[in-house]
Image (cartoon, rainbow, N blue to C red; front, side, top):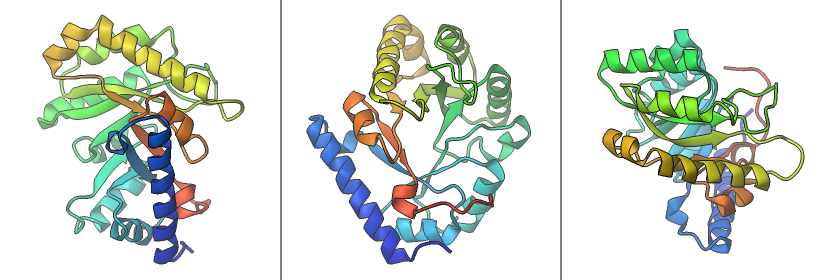
Length: 241
């Protein structure tokens, strides 16, 4: 059973206060950081409760689950959806053009299909490149060595607008190192590809990094989007919707 609406509202308020405090500590404007409520596995009623408490950005990781929730919540006109998980080729039809931002472009095959579908549909899909800086076998994303190649392809891909980078750091140790390295790559790519970015109308201004346990460190390193789930909704049900 999902937590009652008043519990979600209280949790959300606490997380937003913590995000604001992290921004204050980092001498950043709180409006420069978007809090994404990660609602995967949570029922539509839990999303409605967070929405009623003022939350507008929600993140989903499974395409079919997102499809069903989007249809169930279409009466919420200003809800903003983010897709933050691996996207299989045969499920892109539910995502392209229906999310504000796809955070997890993680391989060339998927990028090719995403580009083809977006271009054919006449939409421009904003995307982030997921980077696996630690080269963890259990996680997706391009390696540090592959980053320049992916950057070149993204900048030549019609139908997508490359907005920045995303990371899932190792679960153990201090995540600050990985956040700082990703931010450094953002700066390097901005400088290297400034003309191509300008031609595409991109500013490469987005860093999606930080979750419930480490978003303060991510904000200190320059995160523009933090992804928080359990701290808002409580433990997730184990079964996928």
